[in-house]
Image (tube, rainbow, N blue to C red; front, side, top):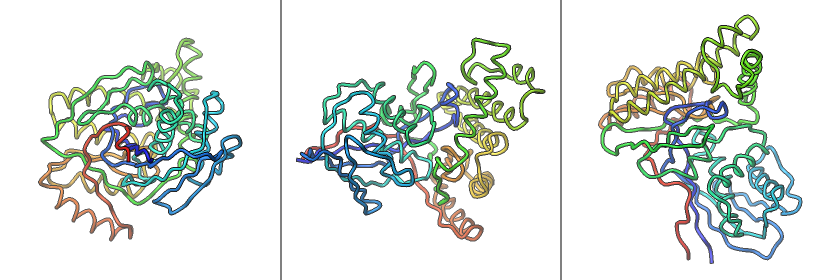
Length: 368
């Protein structure tokens, strides 16, 4: 008898590249999902079919190996992590598919990894807490070569409908932030420029942040992350640090402040202020953190001149992916038509647009 599980994608209203700097983020679960159908097996392997790729893999439980150029690396990484922690494994057969786009900045890889961790905890009786499962999922993704933070996994495991989560990535404390269903709409534009984070400069950004922390620590021995660094600290090390590293650190400091300002603006339903913060975030990601690209900048710049748009920014790690935008619901059709036409003419690419609602975290959806 198959058990069905559903793992959502992640959107992040604001707070990009702050999680691995022990800062603040404001994510939630998207209504786009991966769905898994799972049955126990007597084999000593995991047999996984990816419907979206029409591919089938078998991953051994004792010696899984990792194909770094293939989606099955996430399956193998989870097996490695389970073995490293002495967690029991048995054979499973599963198939997964869904409407969550891959490589578009909504954490499809984290949805897959978290889905596998959640399934194994349920199927094999691991008895792990939600926080332990989040950490296991993060460790598994690190094994694939991406040194990401904790935000994606936390949102996928812990979200609730119509709420974002203000997450302190240092203390793991949270505050729910209601996102009203009425009012302006959140939507995501998939640029069609998809990234593989292992092959992108993602890890280089993290290393730049760590270099700044190492320099500041010479004067402030107690600090552990950019969360502890101030603008004044950056001035003190300006002659010692690379200009690009300083710009990236400044972005993180400013983005942390924007997250807290966003919570206040959402609470007050101050949509113009929400839009202003989105636009400021993109400016920093584009010019200081340098993770945008021509296609994303075109979309954000185009949206800035359209009626009914409050603001927009790239969402996700960058280097492609998507743009998050807040706009009036009755303007979405016009925005969609104009952007699709302009984007096709400029880049020869097909633009996809998703109206996003905030949904539940990972869960069992049915038994049959």
